[in-house]
Length: 167
Ligand code: K1U
Ligand code: ZN
Image 1 (cartoon, rainbow, N blue to C red):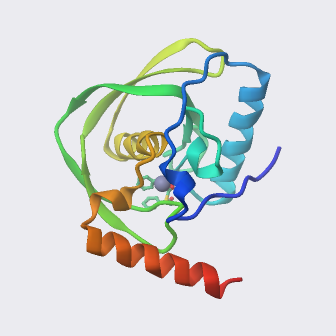
Image 2: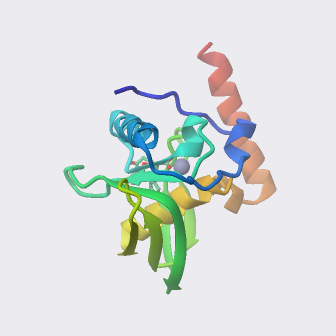
């Protein structure tokens, strides 16, 4: 297994649109293990392939209190939405930044599992928020894209400064 490097905003590779996975094979299953290990090592509750510079549609989440309920979604699509929820989100690609985002409160996601079988998952609360955040990553959307241009540029400058000072 391996811990993969996570891209940091405003890296332009975070804007790439991920392509669907055609065959769920051992290579995909190994990648799923590595991205899950990366999420746990980074103390995250989710991670999208885009964030580790793999532009294929795969996300992992674990919103359970003891982080013992890993869920992997391949080619996830939101097929139903209800209500609204505002949540202060974090992002492993945007360190030291929390942003309040309004999203759907309840969603149903259709995806493939690691056996390549179709699954449906209904989610609410933090799980729904996290799934929408990760599916956004696959579309090249980072949560700061919901901010005004001025605020987004401020976050970008702050992170570039942090990256330069850590070199
Ligand atoms: O995609 C990511 O960068 C992971 C991100 C997922 C996420 C957290 C919170 C709301 C939506 C999506 C994180 O795991 S950030 C770190 C974290 O564990 C966390 C931060 C704020 C609230 C709850 C958890
Ligand atoms: Zn994120």
